[in-house]
Length: 412
Image (cartoon, rainbow, N blue to C red; front, side):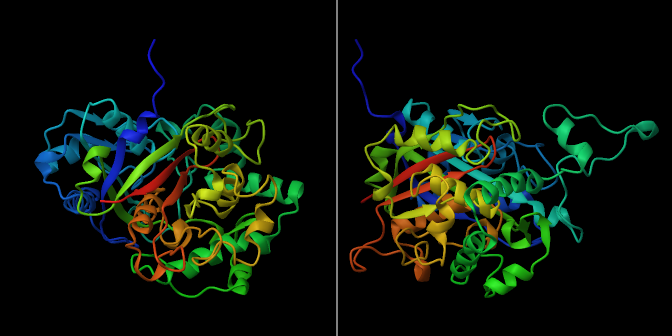
């Protein structure tokens, strides 16, 4: 009989990170930004292009609205002249960092030794001078004026003007206001904390100071979510190198060991028919991650939690066990507990609300910087300022799409 082993993801470590320029309407192609990030990550890992034998991305070319997908794996392989033993570019799975999970499993299975993982967006340039586009609501009529048909839950939401994830997630927020007594002032703390942290991140999209009154005065997007509850479309690419953990001790920078991943989805794969609209898939992803580790929420020293919308961060705080169900509003109230020098430093690079919508990969990048002690002015310090954090959690996704990963610092 085969003996029990540690989770396979523990054979993987993030040994290099890289990021292109990040900003609004950079006017650069997605492959241009991607190559910048990938070359930076490879060099950061102390490797050459010839060492990379795996490649993974999300969501694959041609998916979603303009600027959303970035270049596909074949295009990047060709641009970098990589010789691959394994690659992946699919879109289905547990959230945006499913590409990271796939890379960990490939390394653990021996299919590759150094996998380059990237995520690129050019949504800001694609948006041009107009507003953000909805999902399906901006489709053009076909021949003869025929309106495109949509399947799944979209057929029940688009006809009523719910063309954006902002509309769908607003229902989650509204339910939390009703069921738990969440207030706009409490919700605002997620956005205010992100803006404070972005001030010391030179790559952040929004760095100007923002106060509670600024938040309250912002226009409403989909009640109760206002402008500052929504992430900021931007252009940029993030890349990491996932290597076999044995290489981590030789890497030039401290490696980030993958301790556990969370991938479960035990409810219906639906934005509007989940059994508990206040938790959604974050509940299952978090539970499956904790089931794969001996570490507990109290061990986490920095949290990079998905903030495509501010309410999702509160959902993740509860799902990951940092507070009880319904108590995330009180947990963040006043902002002290989630500050860089607080009990649980949260989204220390400005998250997506102020740092820019890098679709979860900016959070992964920031977690690695924090564990390596490379976060400059926003660096979290522990033990009277003597060391960087040793355990970080990263989550991504909202609604029926969610994944989480627990990272630990691996000394070189």
